[in-house]
Length: 127
Image 1 (spheres, one colour):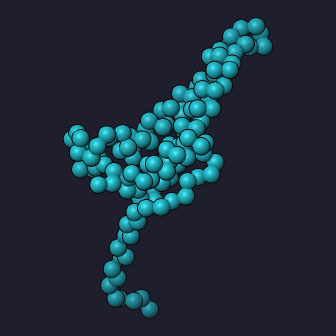
Image 2: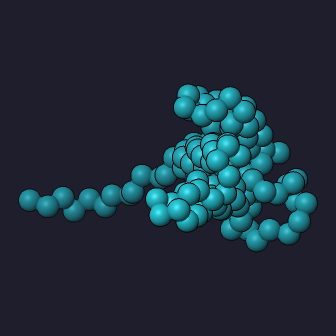
Image 3: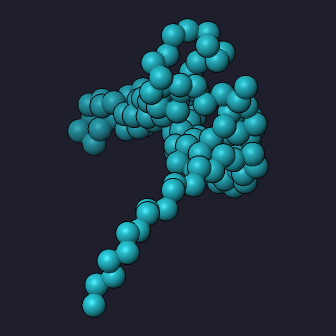
């Protein structure tokens, strides 16, 4: 028999992080940056996932830069020609991904209120 009682949906819980473990697989400098962002900004759980993705993009970009510095922008083909180093494409995608994630999280704003931001794009910076 159906229950005719009206149910109120539960209100969403808004979590704001103050402490969070830095992912162990990140490079030392990226771990420091990650920890500094957590300290300076109010981040919801979904922001932490975006922050981790941004940190991983940065580490990938740095790894590619090391490969490119060692091998150069082009590599030899089996037929004696030259082709772009695959790390150049990976570096470009990682750099673009990092920039987009930083923009998505609104971490590119120097100070809260430093420039006009539409209400939907408010800064996550701690006040």
